[in-house]
Structures are given as C-alpha cells and as structure tokens.
Amino acid sequence: MTSIDREFIDSLPKAELHLHIEGTLEPELKLELARRNGVEIGQSTVEEVRATYAFTDLTSFLSVYYPAMEVLVTEQDFHDLAIAYLRRAAADGVVRAEIFFDPQAHTSRGVPFSTVIDGLWSAVQEAPALGVDAALIMCFLRDHSADSARETLEASLPYRDRIVGVGLDSDERGNPPEKFADVFAAAKEAGYRLTMHCDIDQEQSIANIATVLHSIGVERIDHGTNILEDPALVAEAKQHGIGFTCCPLSNSFVTEEMKSREIATLLRDGLKVSIASDDPAYFGGYVGDNIAALAEAQQLSRDEVVQLARNSLEISWADDTRIQEWLRRLENAASAR
View 1 (cartoon, rainbow, N blue to C red):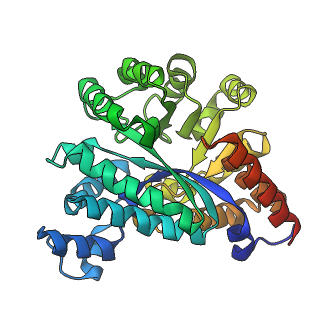
View 2: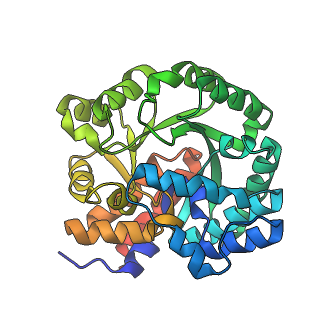
C-alpha cells in the first residue's frame, strides 16, 4: 500500500456534509465575540476558553456546546463564524460544504431567525470566492418538542431558497425519529431534502436507523455505523444509495474508539460513506484531519481515500452539473499523484 500523505488528501476535491456551524466556534473567536457583545463567559484568555472544551460523552459535550453559543448575537457574528469555517474548509480541499445550523438554539434565547439566516447566508454568498460552493441545512433539536420543530419549519419557509434541506440533531436519548415524522413529512412537501442523525451506540440505535429509512425516507444518515448490526438494513442502504456522513474524530470523544473499523467496513462493502468533521473546534480536527486519522487507523489505500471523496461528491445535494465537474477534477487530482 502506498502511504497516504496529507498533501494528497487535501489535493482531492471533496464535499463536507456533516458540519455543525456552531461547532466551528474556535476559542479565539468565542473570546472575540464575547468581548464584542459584552457577554460574560467566565474566561478572559484563549487558554481558559480552550480548557472549557472538555467532555467525556455526548451529554457532557452538549452541556459545553450550547452555553458557548451565547456569544453569537448579531448577524455579523454568524457571518464571521461561517466565513472562518469556509476558509478552513477550502484549505482542506472542500469544494462543496453543506452546513448544519440549529436555529432553535438561538431563537430560544431571543436571537431572531432572520439574524441567524442572514448572517450565515452572507458567508455562503462569499464562499465561491474561496472556491467553495456552500449550502445550508436547517436542523431541528430532537430534545425540543415536535411543536417547536414545526414552528421552526414555518419560520424557515420565507427563506426556502436559502436552505437546501433539514436534519435532526442533539440528544437522541428518548427522542426517536418518529417523534418528528410529521414535521419531516411537511418539510419534504415544502421541497427540503432530508437527513437525520442516528448517533453511534445510542439506545435503540438500529431501530432508529430502520425508522429513518422506512418511515421518514431520508436520503442520508448522519453517523449511522450501527447499521452493521443488521445485514438486511446494510443491503437495503446499499441498494438505495443511502449516504452516510461519518465523523471519526468526534466518535472517539463520545465512545471508546473512532469507529474506524465500522466506517472502513461500510466503505469496503460499497456503501456511500463520506467523512466529515462534525464539530471540529471541539473535537480537534477538520475534514482533512478526519480522513487522515481514518486512513492511518485502517490502512486505507489511495484508491479508498479517493472513493471517500467521490462518495462525498456523489451524495451531496449540489446541482448534478457541478457534481460531474467536481468528479472530473477529482479523477484528475487522483491520477496526477
């Protein structure tokens, strides 16, 4: 096997399809925004902020994650958050970024939906200058009510042309996909594409995966490696071209291992597995870092790394013409090295 160097990984055009924009809030920017907006966060140096980014599982991560968002107040704040991520993504060879955002985490604390979407959209419009085609995916918080999700969906409709799809994230315990079935049906009717988190090693993991495939009708599953517990579901996902957006480094924070074997198994079985960075400010790595970690852990070949990039482009929700253009660029980049 030819060793996989980072330069090769970054040279490959790729899509990042599982990225929470609030999870890109680096300590430096958090401190800057806190000072800008007069928000008391209890830390006064970057090192002190970084020390708060500590957790041992999904629940403790969320208890750090949501309070950090208090520094996001103005349209400019959301712009600055998104454009900082897009610059970093471009350096990793990302040509398509489909960015999750959690409006309820902001509207619930008094920040208008319009402030969030206008700030993010202004960065999306600047992304082509960085070589990135960006889009927004609105996520519902599964530990909020279905009524709250419905209200958020209604609030999004005036901005329908700015949002490509909807997802479901946050604490999965006691919040199965069927809780939001009606909201997702309404979102699909409104023209949104559908994805959902099926977090790793959660209660009812395999039942939740079956639900999102059979009842919700998603096109992609975020995380989802527990599907290997049911070979029939694996075969079904392969047959229907379901995309998987896997995040090795974040997996290693909420479980004992990054699920590298499971991810590689799905890839080698021909499923549409892609790699993304989830919440990189908290998990210590952007998309290139995640691919490199997986490649090292599972001794991926160059062809397998190229296949990960190919999958990411093919399961993206970009225009098909753009996808075909990126695939040609990918083949050229792969053959040039």
